[in-house]
Length: 278
Image (cartoon, rainbow, N blue to C red; front, side, top):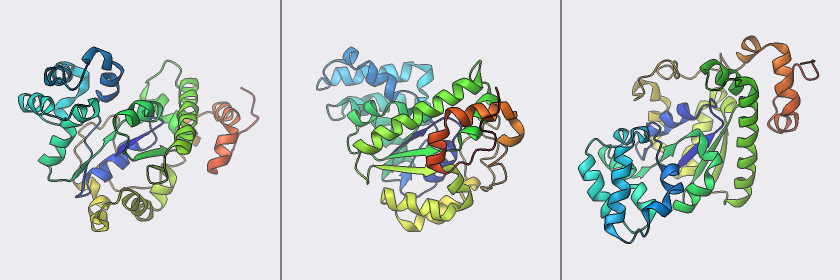
């Protein structure tokens, strides 16, 4: 199971809920799948166990991969990777399989917002994967991106990133089968959490009995950072759905609405400042 979407759209919240299900292990964000795939020529023929071992060692050595979130037994990880089937997907999935085993779960997944832009790599490695695309009101996503300070110009960069993410989602929605691609709107989640999670459970073929654990996700969170995710230890609320109205100036709202008018209309996001001079 893979999940992505424009950053600050609720992927971490949904990932935490999914990880709470007894059937599915979805660790806190890792960062090696796409980088490793883009370097696949470097690893060479995956039918060679030493090549698989070399790839696993590279993952362990790179500080940004966050492989420690999957396992701290790096020796076992390297050797199991070397013994994996001879495909890059099988090798890269080893750590996730170890994470799932450690938590007694039968399936694993991974979440990273940029996966929506890198689905060519994801589906090349895991052709039977299921993908969840998370969509949030672009005004809210952009306001949050700017608040975090990820870009020098969060307003324009965030707007462009939301648009790129949705264009990629459109392409893959057409390519993938209905049982491989599901879109979840953040606003629907917070307004009808049980109904939305039931859709997720059905789509993924998980045991419906695990829904109760998903609803109480905030009692067993595994993310300690409160700067970027300050509300994960609290039940879902719709109170902040329209907080962008106070964090964005009216001309900024107008810029987002004018740029993304067609796509906002598609999702039912009503404009409040369209046509306001920038």
